Length: 292
Image (cartoon, rainbow, N blue to C red; front, side, top):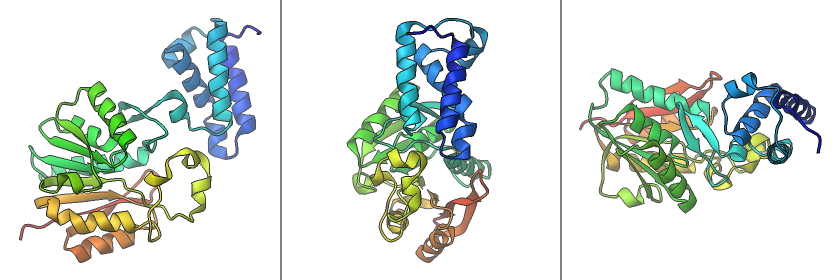
């Protein structure tokens, strides 16, 4: 096996990733992907890669890096390959049992912070994250609101285990992770905030066969009724679990904003509105359950 320095491996890995890219985004991220793979293998930072570019890789390091590179060339999501993805500056373990946290979902956390700044949610409150997956949303809220009690709920046992591991690694004692079929395990509880990034993709959507989504669990992506079934269920049942003045915030597809807002309004929510994601598309909709 030929000897490779860090710089040499990064260069050849980037070239292979560019050559194997099936879209412009994959090609543009080739250098970053190569650095992420090698930093993971070496258990070092990007700074180390830049500082010690002429350092030779051992045979074991080279074999491991080449193996992970082949997985990436076959289309495997980088987050699954290295087993981690950052969300809201939190390092979260990920696995093929859950969705990969995405930056667009941070829009929901920003909305929660705005509600707090506007004093529309209490300084000491409670939140419920339905379909928590890796725990990304629940743990971000628990980080920002240490005086809150945050519950992350998921029906899939593997997701519950993973989210629980992330909660423990981050040392967030104000968060709990439970197994629940939507509201089933919190039937007698009410909250000041309910959030969710539920399945919202139509089973016939061609995007299910493209990019990272191909490798993510279908159960966390696809919903009946053209992707609206789970959103509609969460909205319909939310008032029974919201305190007066509590908020419901939901992530959805960019074409579903009007339908979600209509459901919220019909159910009796007020201050119904949207927030746009990083691409400028309406991605989060929500409303306030009024005090009657």
